[in-house]
Image (cartoon, rainbow, N blue to C red; front, side):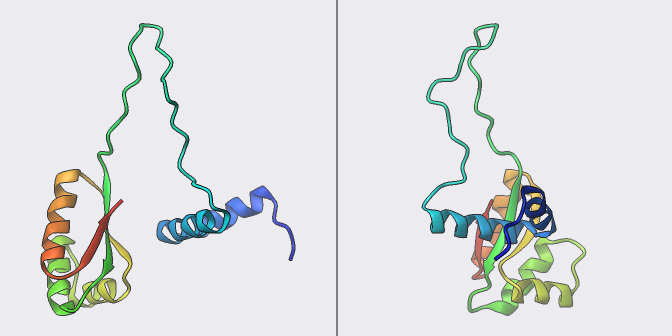
Length: 128
C-alpha cells in the first residue's frame, strides 16, 4: 500500500462529512487503543492578572438521529416539526438514512427540546 503524505491525508479528511470523520476517529481510537481528546492540564497557569483560566461550557449542539425505532412514521412527523421547511420526502430520507444530523449548532435549550420530542416519538437521539 502506498504511503500518504500529511497533505494528502488532510485532503482526504477535508472531503469527509463530520459524521464520517467522527466514525473514523472512533475506529482509529479502537484500533490503536488511544484517545483523540486533547489532554487537560491538571493545574492551569495563572494569567498575568492572577485570574485562573475558566473552562468554557459548550453552547452549540448538534442533534443527531441515531435510529428511528419502531414508529418510523411518527418520527418522520416529528422530524418535519423540528426541522423547519422540510417536506415529507426529505424527512423520510433523513429518517431512513440514520444516523444523520437533524439540527446543527443550535443552543442547548433548542437541542434538548428537539431531543425530548424525538425520543418521545420513539427515536434514538444523541447530542454532540
